[in-house]
Image 1: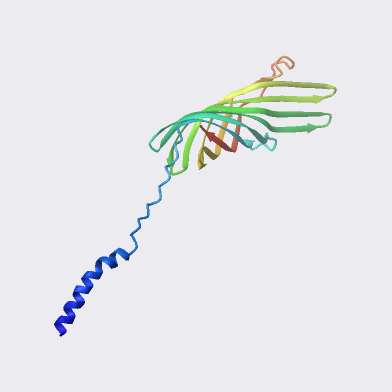
Image 2: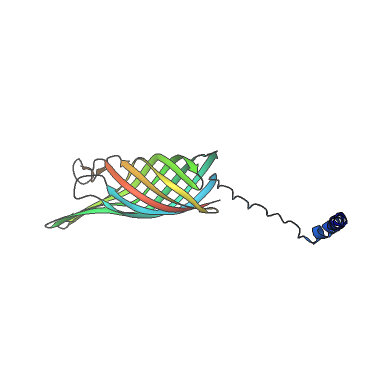
Length: 216
């Protein structure tokens, strides 16, 4: 009897197995989420930027102030390495004034810009880079006293070098922070008014700027 019961139970179990298997829910497979591709920095971009600059001097009377403008550039990329060229131009109010009894003088950078090469490397969405190249500035020197006023504008030229970090925070969009040291050659002002003119000497300034770029 025991053997019969065990055999019957076994046969019943074997007969029920397909039915039980049919009643089990189908196994579902969840597809692994797609990994977002890392951004490419290659191509053309335009943007806006602004910052603050101050003359590199121990003289208490030194030019300083803000500036703002635009940027245009092009990048090439090979693996993690990025190299390119960038130009920027900005209106500026970087100035210093001196006042004496009956006389006042002002030195002011009204605009400035650069044309620079950039070279750096990427880590995920971040680009770290060094940069350097040509720098220019529109400078106006003016003075007034004893009923006489003088004013002359010169375009200073020189070089710039620095570095920065840029982050691709959304498709096509990046934000950056950058430091530039700018060194401008000496200019001679008021040579047509004052015998020998006034030699300005070299002008060196520190500048920090932030910007946002759109990448095509």
